[in-house]
Length: 287
Image 1 (cartoon, rainbow, N blue to C red):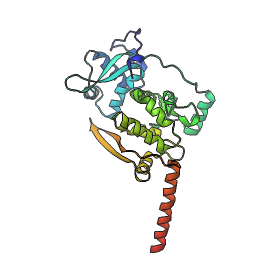
Image 2 (image 1 turned 30 degrees about the vertical axis):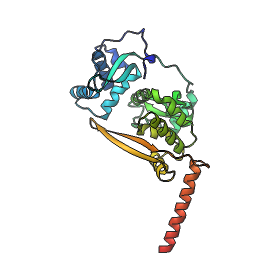
Image 3 (image 1 turned 90 degrees about the vertical axis):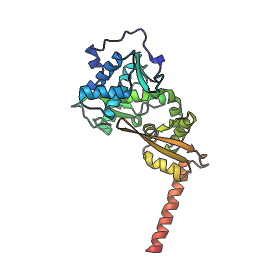
């Protein structure tokens, strides 16, 4: 998210404005928006928001963290390091400009998605009797995602807004993600993503690895990572960091290897054939 998305001509609402509730599908997200509006001159840390959520709702967990990020679906909120102690704070600058519409999802395509993928949210399982469902792009259009059946899924309004906010927080690395997604198989998509983040000096969030690993038949990201390591010879390490009770998982590329001349899928297939032959031979020897 950047200042370029700011709708500078639109005045901000008063934090007590009841209309804020109508913007979001969650009371907690609306409360997060009020909190950021109140603290515009003194941007809060995530820990301060969690304390507020605990006080108001009696809970503070990973969902509470997500609610703060969901405010970005309507407002420009920057994550910046505070001078002095280096803490990350969340500064609400103003309204977010209305997004330019991409390719429209036709009623026929929407019906096909609901019919074949289910009339329920793919993230939480809620159906239309409990929430408004929307058809969402799995890979955002801005990152090269297409408006086609394979790249669409039903989401409830709350999770759709949360997902949009999460992706908005990664807009600065959007081009790198787009280049990774342009690869034709999950091994190379994961690999190129790891390379891009490594070149920026950053570890790769597991959520993005799961996103680019999606493939009709070969979409298990953990297995693809293992194959990158043990079949294709890449040196990759994982990191787990617990913050405010939430575990964040990232992957760091230590050393990459050139892609095989015949392509990663062929190399993995050859390895699997050899492994099965070895196992069959061992079974015969001990049978």
